[in-house]
Length: 169
Image 1 (cartoon, rainbow, N blue to C red):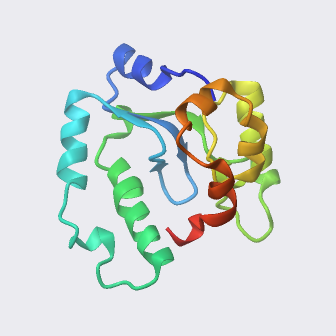
Image 2 (image 1 turned 180 degrees about the vertical axis):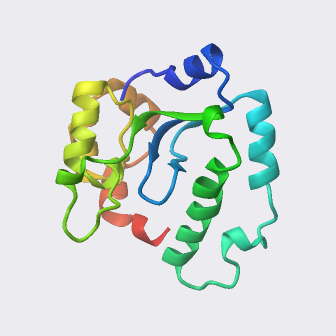
């Protein structure tokens, strides 16, 4: 949504080994992967943890459900990765979790990705720099944004909105 150097600035000015755009406490400490930066030592930890063969258990090679495969990947490559870093060596710039009074009754683990009110609050009050293109409420609010248009010049947004089933990935 805008030019953003916050993660790099945080890495440069601190002793953190990993800095994420957002983190969630909904399933333990979850440093979401949408945008992360690593120090030199941090990238070594990341590579030792995440650079594994496609047959590795983290990819759920025996699972047939795309949803279960995705959960397995997120659990290993996002949630468990965060625990490879000491708490004082990891941080995020934004909280991905809404206040409890915003939680839908069915699911108390909804982060900004699925909570329009939280995303708008982060964007409007804290200058949150990103939107996920598969969230209609986010994409339709930024269609005329020159930055989005320049980074998606080869992307058919109508096709993205109507033809891709992101839940199956």
